[in-house]
Image (cartoon, rainbow, N blue to C red; front, side, top):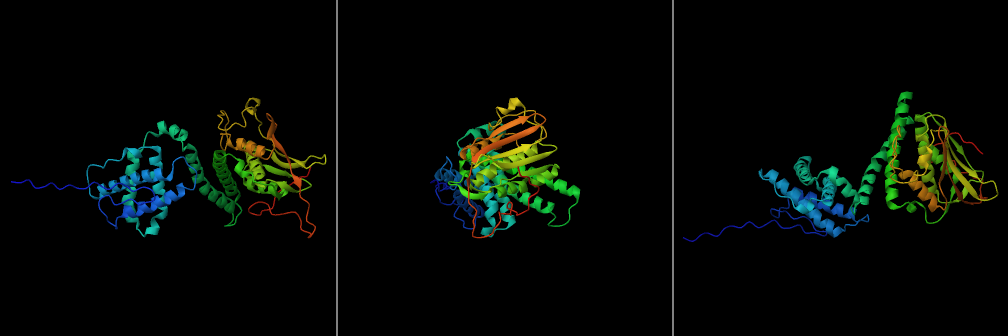
Length: 408
């Protein structure tokens, strides 16, 4: 009696890389939820991936993203069909890049599922499948974290983390400031202080995120290609406005010293970044007294201005002055800090000062305070005589009026 031929089930088709979409592993079902969602997520992820310089190209990412999508799809199918044996996951996605792509696909799914007209109930099994794949490929993070940071995409990973931090922190800053100023209703003294502390902490975290981004990218990108006219007083007042909640929360006063010849030619963005970082540092290490933010003219007829930030804080021990501007330093024994101890901020300040052809210097005395300063040659911009327009009064992005100011 002849033996009937065995029915052979065709193997699931492989993922088609390079701008294609993940096929349905178990048949061409256009109603398949994972196919719709993962196709949309992969396309969005590849677009975002190409916008930043990375060592891993889009072709390789597309290949690996297909394997990740196939693994998600297979787990989803196994759960729906109540298959007791979990499907095998391709070993190639057991990598830092594979895990990163899984997280990116999950994020893009959260962002883009509404465009596909799907309901929440259809997404829950898919998110469950993503979580099972994540658990399957998750390594011992304590052992692999250093390897990820030291890998070819370590800097890109840090930049992604910093970008993810800055957006919510910016929202916290705006909301805390709005509440503190009573724009949504009256606020008592205790709430004022608490909102000031919230603002201080959020600004500190936002500064750390900005420092990471700037340090990873160098720092020269903040210095405009060519000098442009700007108001020195407006920059000082803008910095004052930003740090005002910090000073009020610590009951400190911030004094301004403005130059007589205000309109100058230079790099306003880089100058603002340095002064803001130095002023927040000064407030951080000052428990009582004041902080002075100043721009004093040389007095010898030149166009040189000395920018300085002076505080009445605790001072810096002499043995730490030699490593103060080193990034990622390991300072111990410093308590009561609100911000980072990494040293990135001061390292970037020195880089920016050097890009403006200056040198950031420091002098400090224990128990007396600290003074950071640098000199810039800024050409004087002649005042316009066509109108009786006064110097700019708007101070900072929110247009608040400045506090006290003192002339030399």
